[in-house]
Amino acid sequence: MEPDVFIGLDVHKSSITIAIATAGRLGEVRRYGTITNTPEAVAKLVRKLSKHHQSPEYIYEAGPCGYVLFRQLTNLGVDCKIVAPGHTPRRIGDRIKNDTRDAEKLARLARAGELTYVWVPDPIHEAMRDLVRARYIAAKDVRHARSHIQMFLLKNGVRYDGKSWGHRHRVWLSDRHFEHLGQQIAFQSFLNRVEQAEVRKVQLEAQISELCQDWSLGPIVTAIQALKGVGLVIAATLVAEVGDFSRFPSPRHLMAWLGLVPGEHSSGTSVRPRGITKAGNTAARALLFEAAWSYRTTPKVGQWQNKHRPDVCQEFKDIAWKAQLRLHGRYRKLVAHGKRSNVAITAIARELVGFIWDIARRVRPIAV
Image (cartoon, rainbow, N blue to C red; front, side, top):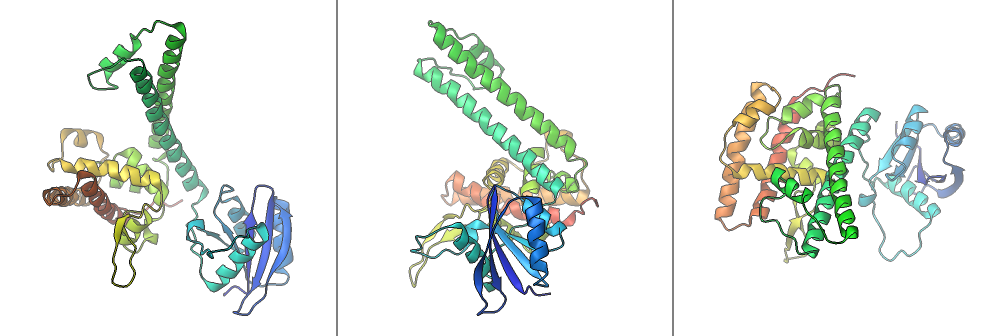
C-alpha cells in the first residue's frame, strides 16, 4: 500500500520534532509539533496519527540515537525508514537551519522520492558490528600508544636500529634508563599503555572468534577466509559492516558502497578523473587495503594458510586460487606500466571485493 502521508522526524536525545507531508504533488507540508523522545510519547503519537491516516510512513536521519526509534515504530506496526544523511539533497545558499525545517525537509523529500535509505541490521548483527568496531578502536589505540613511545625516544635522542616491536625490541625498551625520575615514570606509563591496549585488542579478537560461531552470518565469515590475506578479523569486519550482501545486485555496487571506485568531475568536453571516492566505511576499506598487499607475492597456498585458515568447501578454494592468479597478475601488470604501488594496491582491493561478493552470495546464512 502506498503511503498516504509522510512523517518527517528530527530526532534528538530528549526530543523529536515532527512534520507531516500529505501525499500528492501539491499536498500540504506542515509542522505537527514536538514530543519527548520516550517510548510512551512515541506510542501515543503513532496511535493519534493512525486514527487519521491508513498508511503513514515515518522517516528520520541516521545519527547517534541509533536504531532504537526505528525498532519502536516497527514494533508498533508502522512503516519506518532511516535516511543516509550524506545523500540528503541540500539547497545552496540556505542559511537557516532548525529542527522544524529539518523535519519538514525530510517529509517533503520523502514524498518526492529523493532520499536514500540505509539498511538496518537486526539487534544481533548490530551487536557484532559494535564488537568489530571496538576491536578497530583498540587497534588504533595500539598504534597511537606505540607512536608516543617512538616520539618520546626520538625526543631524548634514543634510537633502536633493529626491527620494532619484536621480542628483542621489547626487551631493549624495558632496559631503557633515563636520568630524571620524571622521565622514567613518563616512559614507563607509555609502556604500560601499550601493554594494556594490546591486551584489550587480543581479548576483543578472541570474542569475535567465539561469537562468530553462533552468528547467523558466521558461515559467510568462514567462507571468505578462503581468500588469501583475509583473516578472521578482516572477514568479520567486512561481513559486520556490509551485512546482507544480496542487497548489492553486482560487485560494482558493493565497490561503490565501499568507496573504491574512481571519482570524476567533468563538465562538457572537460573530463577530470579523480581518486577513489572514499565513501562508505573507513575501517572496512582500510582492512581491504591490508588484505590486498598480500597479492604482491607469488601465488601459492602455503603452510601457514593450510594450518590456520578454517576448512571450507572446494568451491571456495577454487575461487580463492582464481583470485590469487588474477590479482597477482593484475598487480604485476600495473606496476610494470609505471603505476605506484599504492595505486596498484587500490585497484587490487577493488577487484578483491568482487571475489568476496561472489563467495558471500553463494553461502546460505544460518536460519535464526
